[in-house]
Length: 414
Image 1: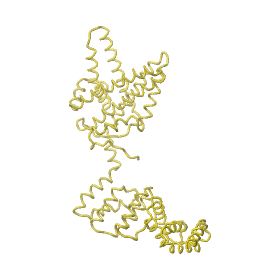
Image 2: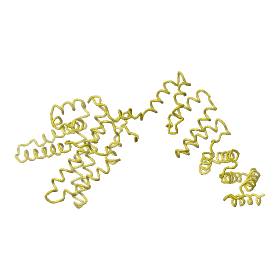
Image 3: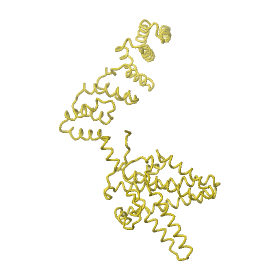
Image 4: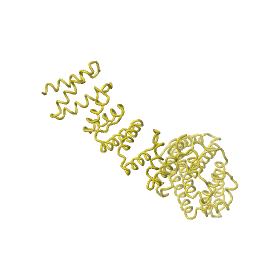
């Protein structure tokens, strides 16, 4: 099962804005956003266009409600689809009714249109939250439900209302601006993209606020329960146990880590904890043995630079340390050569030639070593001796010509 990304509840709410702003543009939300935007072109059709527009907005609100519910459950990624329900149509109906009511009040000259606007701004977040969490339209329309939700939030609910008004103003300004400077065929998708983005962002924000206060709503976030069920945090729990035991029983802490480290996919945090414990106990040989294992693991997963760092750490303990596998040793030698770490490259090449003298890659690393030795006049003798031995041992190797050329160059220099 794929790793579940959880909302980070440890960071302050104010620091989550960049991630919240990206939310409608990531993973499954982006194609949904594009699909809803393009679908609005169908509203240009005669006769049926207005009905299609209502259907598109009902689907948009249905997905936005799913985003709210998904976020409230602690999932950091947007949902891939929305569960069927009446929430989308309920929100469309509520918005239509508020619009019609505002027009009727305005036409009758009674006044009070601002009152309707304020009432909608205050109640709509509570209605959306209730629809997302309960799915009961009548319950969501009950003013007592709104009061309960507002009381559970307190002052932050007022901030949410203010933010929603700002978003509504920005969306309205974008409609006016795009319509004034662009042809309809271009301004229409741009406006609907902004409007749909704002809707998903707005509902995601409400979900974040519910998740932060899920205890007040009697909710148990499903994402956290799922993580526990699939043992996703098992390594973190093991690390916590190790750190708790380390001060009183470091040997016991090592015993806890050892079985997990035998698996190739153990995270770096466990390897680092293991090495800290070994260092505290002065277990020099165990550090070198673990170094061999971790270097091989790092190379296997393509993290060769990290492996080179571990090689240096082990070499500080034992200057003669080299990896115990020719492929690992060779890859690190090539990387060190590319990075210009000549002393390490030469040491790895010499170790390669000593430990695996019949390996087919010996001519390659012999040539590499000879080029480095050529940079120092006092080591030309060693370079010539190495090349002559390679020429004798590997007469049919594809690199034999290069070996001969390098050897001849040394002879001419002498």
